[in-house]
Image (cartoon, rainbow, N blue to C red; front, side):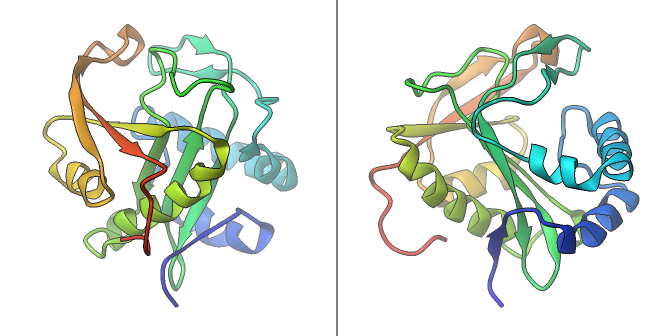
Amino acid sequence: MPTRLVRPAPEHLPAYLEALDRGWSPDNARPAETARAEREAIARDPAAFLAGLDDPEARGAPVTLPDGSTRPRLPGFRRWIWDAGFCGSIGLRWQPGTPDLPSHVLGHIGYAVVPWRRGEGQASRALGLMLREAAPLGLPWVELTTDPDNLASIAVITRNGGILVGRFEKDAAYGGAPGLRFRIALPSLMGPPR
């Protein structure tokens, strides 16, 4: 079966927990903290955890940044990358009425593939699928950011039509490290995802 994005559901939780137990995290800014918090949330109330991954009204708790500060949650949702099992996670967030994002948000789309499924094209295909889910939001484009030395992520973004729009310094909450900002125009999406 080809790569697909699934809305996280109870039948997917065992594979997700296995990935967390193997040391993977859906968050590359706070990997250990996020993995621990998600395991605890699943143990406490699996249904609430799953419901919180689909939050287009931004009703969830504030988001904790790497420096420990919190910011209001943006509308968004997460999908799990699935191809003969769990491959990773991809999320979309946005601000209603504008394509702009606050400085502490490092892009509209973020993704993380489990190490044992990297190199298979899962991230590229998942990003193409997520762009199709983003298109109905009416955004003219989405931004994605990555570290300048993350060649794999740069390739994923450019394969899906990403154009480098500039270098930037990440928000102080992320340590002010350098980053690259790419844009992908949503109206130009034609043909199958890559």
